[in-house]
Length: 264
Image (tube, rainbow, N blue to C red; front, side):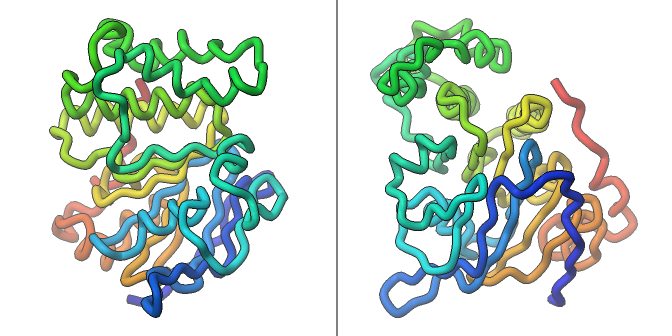
């Protein structure tokens, strides 16, 4: 697969700028010299097969894995910052496993998302709660329900809502559609698309390439730890190799791929 490069259509400096990032597990290089950018308020997707290094990329950005290369956030180099310091700076990660507290209520899980702000003595630390309930009405309906008794789609909504309680500037989502029914996937991606209007930047790791590219401004494709393709999301969605490898549909239908999802 040849490299397709297109300039980011950014009107402001990148919020996240990852330059030549490398992560190794022992002597095995998991990701090699990957460079990506995320502009403020944009949605950027990273797609690729299982084992390509997508989750490794997010874990390195949040500081859970040691890495080489440069990670710049909001104009500052954050390579030496601990995970907690990166979170305090406004980076939030929703992992593939969601990591909810199953025995706690929906609302208590959400409140935990604002604990960093509470500890920083932010008097407005609960100001996101009503907004999260507006984004996810189902969470409000079930605010007293134990998180562990909810459906997979509801747990994913809760995981995203909890991350948003921290008022992040960069939201990183690891496989948000994993294991969800198609109708729920559509609902989740409608919410992700709507986040663009709030100014929150989103870095989206997804195997569901079609859904990811539909809501994204820009996309990257990685295979076996290396960046092999990048470009505007609409252009990637029409690229024959992306269609053949990741979208699983015939060339005659490629124009259908980029029809945007309605924003809830």
